[in-house]
Image (cartoon, rainbow, N blue to C red; front, side):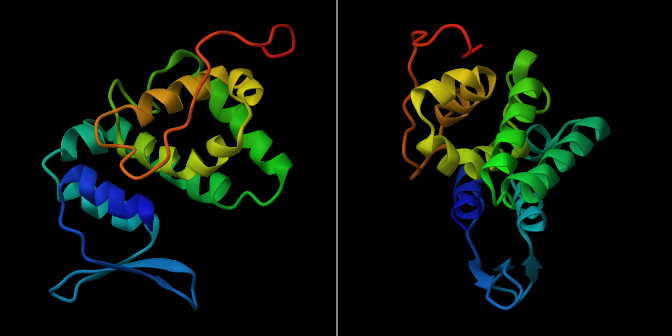
Length: 172
């Protein structure tokens, strides 16, 4: 829920009533007029569409919008549902490789995908050692860049990164 409240704040969209449906374990967003939305992706896209940053944040082309949608699904299917260390290691390696030659997940500026992936990965990064962060240097570079983007981190803990290479050999 924190990620959607932070997203609403970031996009300067009024925060409605946000709750968790205990039976279905799904987020529910309820507007004052009674309109109800269910699910992380649906709510996030609704917030983005109702902001003045819509085009830049949600993708300027059909291809960018589709890529953002893919990364939002990736978060739900891989990051949020990872239950074992092997699952986590697999998606960390995949994302690290993907970001090898990219600053952001989609396009050349912060997008909805970056924002929600940052929030989805925050607890994981909080627990990584400096060695592990260095081992996944492209993902770490991206994460540190996003956490320092204006108004993204909000109430999240600032995750420290070592600027000097600490380990050589197998870390790369």
